[in-house]
Structures are given as C-alpha cells and as structure tokens.
Image: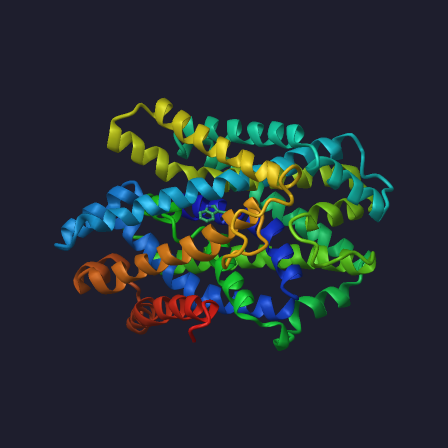
Length: 443
Ligand code: TRP
C-alpha cells in the first residue's frame, strides 16, 4: 500500500508536464544532470527521513511533528513544520489543479478527434485558444477540484489503491509507445543529445535552484505528503529500499516522458523552451499522425488525469486531516473549507494565462518578470519544499535520538545507515542552504 500510495503521489504532472518543460527552458542536459544529482543527494535522504517520521508519528504531519518533538523532549514549535507543509500543499494544488484541468480539456479534444492529421500550427492554435479563455480554464479547474475532493471526502485509502495498481502501469506503457513513435518518426538522436549532453555554460544559479526544486516537487517531498503515507508502512517493511524504489520509478518516468517529447519537438522545429505549454503543443502532433493515434491520445490524457488526481489527493490530505484533528470539524466540513480555499487561489493561475499575462506582482524585487503562476510555482517548489525538506532531515538525523531512528529505520547494512545519516545530517541541509546562498549571490 505504501509503495502504491507513494508512487501515486510522486508520479504525476511533475514527471510528464513539468520535467520536460523545465528541462526545455533550462537548456537540457545540464539541468537533467543537476536534477539527477539532486534526486540522489538531496531527494533520497529527505524521502527516507520523511517516511521515517511518518511511520513513527502515524498521524497528520502537523500532529506527527508535535508528537515526535514531545517524545524527544523538544519544542512543540516543530509542529509548525507540519503547518507550513499544509500551506505549501494547498498552494501547489491551486495551480496543479489548473494544469490538470488542461489535461481534462485535452481528453475532450482527443475524443472529438481534433488531433487527427493536425499541423504544428494547428496544435498551437488549440492550446492558445484554451488558455486564452478564462471561463473554460475555470470550468476544467473546477471539475478537477470536484474530482479530488470527492476522493478526499470518502477517505483516502479505498479506490486509490486500485487506481494506482492498474492505471500507473497503463500510463507507463503508453509513454513507452510514445517513445517508440519518437524513435520512428522523431529526431530521436537530437532528443537524446539535448537531454544527455550537458552544456556546462548553461548552468546558472537559477538553473541549479530549479533542478533542486524539481527534485523535491517530483518526489512529493518537503510538505508532509510522504510523511502522511509513511503512516501506512508496516513495521517490518524497509524504509530505505521502498524509498529507492519509488525514486527510481519516478525518475524513469520523467526521463521517458522527455524521450517521447523532445524528438517530436526537434523534428517539427518547435521551441524546446516554450514553457508550460510544451507537452500540450507536442504530444498531440504525435497522436495526430501515428496509427491508432486518436485512441492512444484519448487513453494517454485520461491516464494523465488519473496520475494528476492521485498526486493532488496527497497535496490536500494533510490539511484536511489536520483540520479534523485540530478543530473537530467533520471530514465533510474540513474538505469543503480546504477545497474552496484552493479553488479560489486557483483562479489567480487561471487568469495569469490570459487577462493577467502582463501583471507582474513583484517586479522590482528578486522575482522580476514572474506571473502569478510563476510566482506560486517558484515560491513553493524552489523555496518552501526544500526548506521543509531540510527541517525534516534535521529532525530525523539530529534531533531524534540515535536509538529511536536506528530502531525505526532498521537498515540491514550498517554502512547503509551511516550513509543515510551522513547525507541527511550534512549533505542535504548544507546542499540546500548553499544553493539558496548561491542564488542570493552570497557564495
Ligand atoms: N510529485 C507530484 C508530481 O510529480 C506532485 C506532488 C504530489 C507534490 N504531492 C506533492 C509535489 C507534494 C510537492 C509536494 O506530479
């Protein structure tokens, strides 16, 4: 159950939508290399720490942190880490749901056969027409939030399991089909070269920050989602090996998505750095020209909606569970309150693609040139998640007593334990802090 839930949370738009467009924006290979390094040196130790705390606390993240702090004789202020995590989750969901809404809209486009025989220009028109219309975006965003809150209302466990067990392998297979198509009809070598030959001159402090943010985002780390699911992990399961399994699966899916997309981009002379619309303006081209493309396209967008759905649930569940515990709300009331807050903030992202394209809230600051959507994404992925992540590591690897964490982790190999502790104590926190300082121009 834990592996399914964690994989369901980790695999989502982050792999299929965000990874390719971030890699495209940041110049390809160098970003991908940094992303691998961040997954291995920061993501994995944080993930192991987060699951460790979750299994020991067995409650919502805010409660877990408070209980564990009490157990270790530490300040109840650690509970604030859970509260910050909930806030981060709600903010991420507010724009994630809008993008999931694009995916829903594309299910309909695919079903109507809009992609068949389409040109690169036609694909661009479909996408631009969609994002230019705030009412349409709002409609699909609302529908996605209703779907998410429906599952949340019924309790997370049921249904989710089946969805992940059957639909994830389906998504995986379809991405493989797309990669095969990219080999046959795309500029596959061009795609490989773009993703795997790092051009080190492309590495700027901002690219490093984004690669780190993407590592946290794609593994769902730093806000308590994985902590929440850690509570489902049985006592005898190995935290380290399940975490490695989840991280590997997640990374593999992102890479395959990249291999499906970039060959199409280069074969059609499209712009790799065009931003968040990337997959929506490339994949339909493939579906429009491959045999059985209408059916594959339909299935693909449906499965992507499911992948987004199981991720979305993990973003909002900590906040819903916390409200039930804290204010004795019924689950219904708590879901309604959280859902409405997220839905309303989502309107800002909807508008940032049309009426507010030129609105820049924080110009003249370090956040120059960022739209509402860009700001939210930057703040949550690149700042709040890594910050949450290092606090989680610090708690697990420094604050918690040695016997408690050794007992909870039970890594078979003594060297494995020491390696995790070293990464979680020093490398991950210092890595994140150094990257922050680097962006601020201090180091
Ligand atoms: N990892 C998911 C994806 O790749 C998104 C996600 C789910 C997430 N839960 C999260 C991101 C918690 C950050 C924090 O699509």
